[in-house]
Length: 210
Image: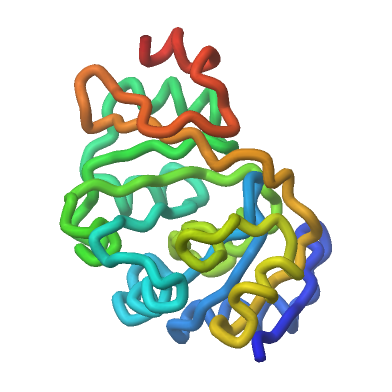
């Protein structure tokens, strides 16, 4: 069975937070809330943990996994190039539901990028997601916490129904908005390309990417 815990991002219980961070460090798998849906998280630097994500979801390894980071220093760890337009988008939309695709740094395992040499990154606006990444000091995968092809989950109960027993810890952070996924823009293209319209409408991006 998966361990289900609650964490208050404003006053987190130290023992519970330590247990979650220890699981991440040891290559374990967690589910946690974001501003869109619940995400399936492991350390971005653990190839063995990343393999678990693909196996748990039943996801093809030819599909890359997105990341959640905390702060520009962590972005520089995973992105080899940060184009000028990225700074405007980051200032306007981060933290929030905008995923940006960058050229991946050599530090990022190729399994994570599915050999595309690019990496999709966002800085979540959900306080609990931010707490976890900041406390673990590593980017976390943020693919939706569900079986591939099934509905994305907006509550811990929905995650348990689909993935209970398959992952180590489910963090119950209440119900997420669960309306749409993050909006995704590819900054490795010139001009930048909208890959997926989601929680941030394309109209809000027009002045930045045309």
